[in-house]
Length: 360
Image 1 (cartoon, rainbow, N blue to C red):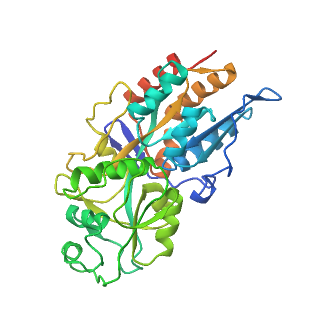
Image 2 (cartoon, rainbow, N blue to C red):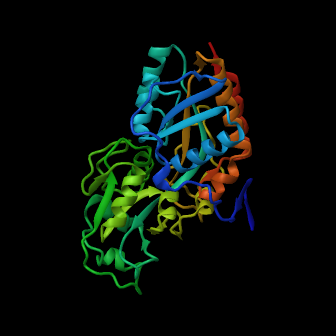
């Protein structure tokens, strides 16, 4: 069944059998130096960064390799912070981040390479509150006051009146709340804290890929938070929607800016992007979308490319891959639960990559 939202079409078909699970997204354990071209006219590329889009990127790279056997693209899900650092040091062929480059990072890039970095979005998604309260609590509703209290450490047990108020028919125990947050530099953390800072009046920890959390247990990557929530009774943590979905974790329904309680889904996340003006450098931030039925914690995720590559085949391959991802890869984004970008934005991305990525 197809649903049309703006110019985004949602396909509810089941994910094909070859789509990798979360546990299979990291291809290598150590960072490899950039490879140029392997024997037999094969092109090899290595990228690293955000875990947020890793399931989709891995699926894309696998399918693209099947269709183009001479191309091998390896992606390491190491978090946006580490991915940006690798990109700035040019120890990878491309980076990936869920937090747009800061002005400081842009200045570092300009000073080192005497040119502007290339930052282009390929997809978007939702950050959800995944929780573990046993099988009896699978429709948890959290008001803004409630989830602000959880992340600030003000609400300490699940039977707190601010939680119970929105869940009158749910048997909430006095189990301690175990808030799980990222321990590594993370674009998902940037998206999450960007929202929390906007909606929680008493939030003092700021916004960033890494912050000093007032409370909670640290875990590395979306993969780590998913595992920690699964194994900890009373746990709640923030992860990208696809991780929670593929791991069968319960996800909270959240109160949005319009006062509506909205379930996380690709459709409700896409509504947050409707009517947004994308800046020239693509660095869109949506800390608190106003649309009536929009899910409240949503963001884009970006690919980081260089203006020049020593190997012409690498530059050509990256251009071809971006074109493919934005014209043929959107169906895989939908099947997994990500948000394909609009046709208009896709054309802007394709034009930018075509014009700015080149061989030396």
